[in-house]
Structures are given as structure tokens and as C-alpha cells.
Image: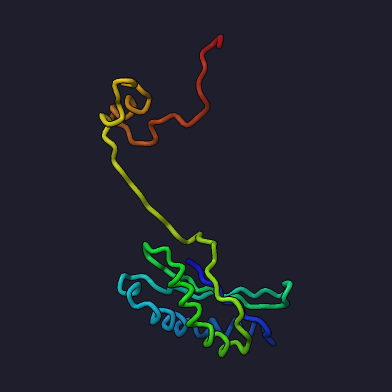
Length: 158
């Protein structure tokens, strides 16, 4: 997950960004002290990134991203709590004013994996003993490659 810390009222955007990145390890360590349980499960803060936004409706700003591995939890509370804990240090490092401390809805770094095994006999029913799915699974083929994915085939004259 990504937490975002918005920093306003900066005199030197790039200098503020450099200051945050120079203290990345310190920020990660502080974020990890907030939730020792998730850290014990091999999760926690993973990275700190910065975005320099020179022109916005509220003026120039820096957005500090906290990349956080919340394991199997949704993670909103732990990420928001970590961002709240980092805000004073971010203000100190940048000389700016932290305004927003939020969880991003962008979850492009979250991965979920799932697998299952369905016995072929569980798919064949008396009503549909020769269904495409059941007949495909009775053959020694890998699912889902055995299921046609293209357009339906037609016969001549239809």
C-alpha cells in the first residue's frame, strides 16, 4: 500500500525532496516502530519515495510516499498511523508544513495469489455429462489452456 504525506509552503522543492530521500532509512525505521506486529510478520515500511509537484491549485508541493507491506491485512489503519507518525519528522526535514496524511487508493503494488483444484467429476452432472468443461478436464490437459478463448466456431452454411 502507499501512504501519502503532502508538504506545502516549501522554499526549495528539490532541496526538500533531497532531504527526505537522504533520511529514507530513518523514516522507514520510524514507520516500523509504529506497528511492531506487522513487522514481526515480515511486513512494514519498505520504501520512501517523493513526488515534486511544481504547479497545483494550492501551489507547489512535495508528496512523500510511504510504501508499506501490510501483509494480508487491508492496511488502511496501519498505513495512516505510520504517515501520522512521520509527519513531524517530514516537516523538520523539509522546513515545510504537512497538510494531508492519507492512504492512496492506488494499490498497484498489492498482489494476491490464489489457486485451487477442482476434480473433473465435480463438474460433470447428470444434466450436463458431456459439457465442454467436464470433457476438457477429463483429458490430461492444464486448466485453463484447454478451454477455447477465441470467438465461437461456426459450420459452413450457418
